[in-house]
Amino acid sequence: MKKLILLNILAALLLVGCGGQLMAEDRVVEEEPVMVVDGEMGEENVISAPSSEPSMTSSMAAPQINSMMAESGMQPAAASRPLSRQIAQVSGSKEEQVIALAAAHPPIAEVLATYPGWVGYASADDESEVTWYVEFHSAEDEWLGDCHVNLETGEVYDVYMPRDLTDEEFAAGREKIEAYMQNSPEAAALLGDFSLWDHDIWYDKWDDNWHAWYNYGLDTWEFVFYLDGDSGSVWLDDYYDPNVLKGDEEAAWNRQQAVELAYQAPGIDEALDGYDNWYTYASDQGDGLWTVEFAANDQLLFSALVDIVNWQVIEGSR
Image (cartoon, rainbow, N blue to C red; front, side, top):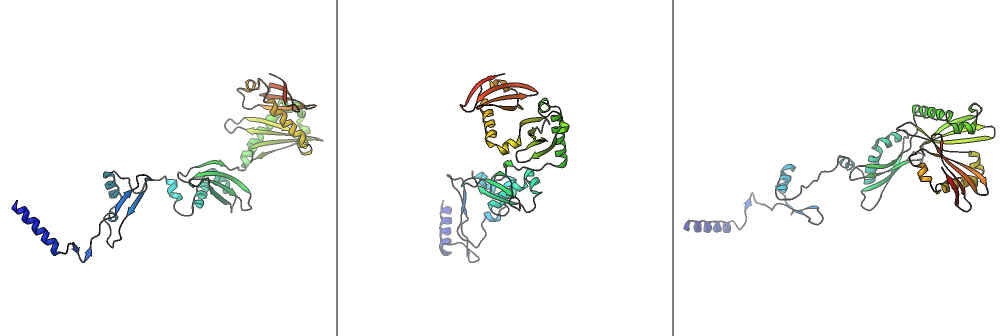
């Protein structure tokens, strides 16, 4: 016990003799930085007094720091991020980052490759600046398409980037349209001898559909098709006289109204159930009355008589 008391007295005298400080080459050893984790926000802040000496934590490798923090229940200072996010953060403003991510997306990159000098525009969807809207224009300011980008994950979605078909794709689609027209009873009944009609076929990239134009004398018909990319089947969506549309917009509008009203006929849902590729025929009966027929696979599915003036279905039958 006496030895312990003597040791304590000697230690106290030594501290007094040194002026109450521990010196090392005339430099004061400062305390180490303290890492504080904000319990409410989950963000990490480092509070440190200025020091000319490197701190203990700065001399450690990252695994050592993370290991020590894990032992104390704290989270590592640098959380892992998706690779795309890391790439996006390399340089540039957020706008430049999202445009770069969008432009690298394969369906978009394929289109942009054909438009040298293209320009991209980006705007945040909200104040969080996590999701962004991006649109692309050609060097001549032609609108090319758009998409959305999540800057946190690097995801590119809601992509609408119409592209022109390759020569091979167009030739294959044209061949399918030609074969369909030659074997369609409806087209044969409407056109008769196909050899008498001048015709042309083209692809509308903006609506992703096909058009077949037939002309004979004063008569003109235009057919609208969709091609199923998976099955390769052809779907006749509509047909009309383009001269009527150009010369009489009211007639075109009335026809559209008649088809819309026919969809309200009792029993139409049951008649079309199980069919995904039906098409419609609308015939003007005069005085606001129209006959609208729904057909698929060369068979009549439903017929309705509608009155677009009084907006009512007169009758409908299967």
